[in-house]
Length: 160
Image 1 (cartoon, rainbow, N blue to C red):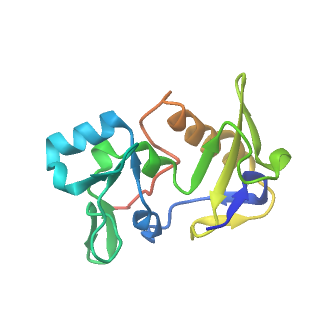
Image 2: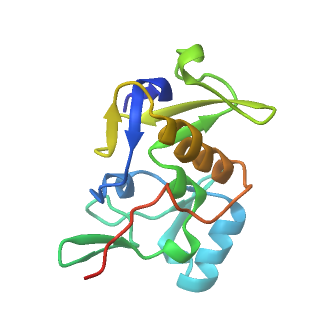
């Protein structure tokens, strides 16, 4: 995994590749509780400090479904924050270096935003205004718990 500062990314759009659904998903306690209540504890795992979604034998998420070649999240109605903000990491310190290029100011908060280079939806280059002012802002608001609804930060499927 290589993390890229957001200032090297022109834009991002979910292409529905499913790569995001093959990572360990860390759950907040309330997210874990809701999943256990609705689907059972066997779809989660834990260690001493954290809760995770259990992965299938192929490494993918148990809530990833393939409908005629279209990958769908079965947790869309209660998707964990870690899933909502992938491929981005919104941090309070520059964990992956390049602090100036990762710094993003939201209101009075200074965050550091990196993207997982494994995501097929990243377009590299100078950040567009749309990406900087709307998409990243939505990711930050979700990470901070200021919003839960997704518009720019999720895949949109056109129905025929």
